[in-house]
Length: 393
Image (cartoon, rainbow, N blue to C red; front, top):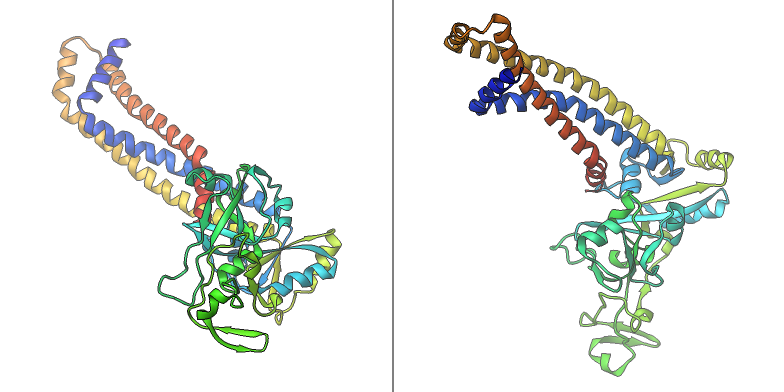
């Protein structure tokens, strides 16, 4: 038997180009449906677990899926914004705790989530290095963001401008990184958290500038009307909140009208959840309140339906590929007729020749199976990470 395996190995090694093509073709046919099933199962587990841990999400009317994915994964979806006053309304109802979220800006590609300290308690996030944010302009980084960018407490994180050509747009803010979160294996590892008011500073709804009542700021005074001082365009606005200038930062307008992306509502019990959802039912309502797990289950049902069609198509492609591989082996046998005749003259029986050909086929299929298993293992190992990255980016 060893002589047959040696001859089969030498033949496959000599015709390495044909062998590599056959191995890769068969490996991909074996891997793709299995790898797809692994990815779908991981997506199902990841999406369902994250959604199940979030009771209710309140947001402006729009796509439910976009709103849920934005809140759960801080992706690049842009659902309609709502007013902060709606979060106050939920809190005052006594039916649920309200956690407002403003997810719009980024810092070098990493999402910035403006929220309150209640979010950290809700998600079970804790500081592993440094301390929690304590004032306007502070932020904390997820474990993956800090590791990838080499961030340490007291480093600076600068928000990215939305549009370099829009001078009236969001103003880049230099934030103080006060802490780094412990890794959780969730999308929270890949974001930067700031206080809700800090994101409103980035929005331009609050700003700080030099004290116009001081003598050194006289050049920036346009007019004085009693106790009111009107500044001109030369007034220096701060792009960083420090202990020295924090008192100069002030907000304009009614905070209840300030924008937020959504509200995570944590109802007292199921009855409170039902009552709260009833307040936002009806076609005339400007907001929608969702159970994230229901939205994700609808998405997964669609994904599973599509998967069946994809697997059916792959089965047809696989059958075609295997038929082509069989044809390649049959044609190679015709080309090897003189080789087979020589083996017969040397005393090899038809059974031995058939065993030799079978060894060659087994070698190709075995190598393809091993390669497909390696691809599947790599998919299982990196699938969840790739899924989170895809949802965020």
